Image 1 (cartoon, rainbow, N blue to C red):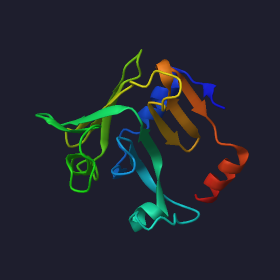
Image 2 (tube, rainbow, N blue to C red):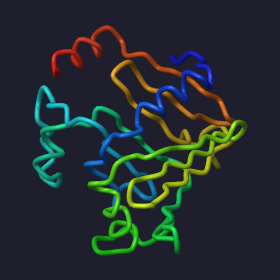
Image 3 (cartoon, one colour):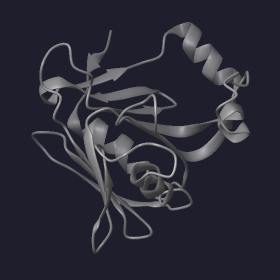
Image 4 (spheres, rainbow, N blue to C red):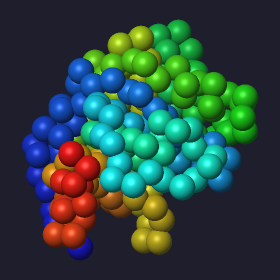
Length: 178
């Protein structure tokens, strides 16, 4: 069960992303509009993931920070919309082509809406990932979460912020991968 977290603590966790490289973005068929971004250092997994559809790097490593987006989002350049949550997510489609532009970039800044928790992440190549917190009703997914070494910061329904610390067994597993 998560506990409340302050906006200041959430902003501190987001601020830790500044300067971090984005080395993987996962999305596409089977995930709908959901996006998973791996940021920061590549942390070796204790056990390789068995999924043969994942590239070897994804099977062997996890991100120091992982941003998981379950609400509406849009990726913008300085001149145009690159892709969005409702684009075609098939291989070669606009969603995957657009999100691939994030790989190899570095997080250069962010802004967080004080009320709705909409998040705007700026990247070194002038791309901006805009996350819109549109999950409001019970039974819907969370809006997004940020996984860190200390736990998971959740932007939940109706602008609820929560922090979920790992259980003792999860913490031991995470420390074993360091």
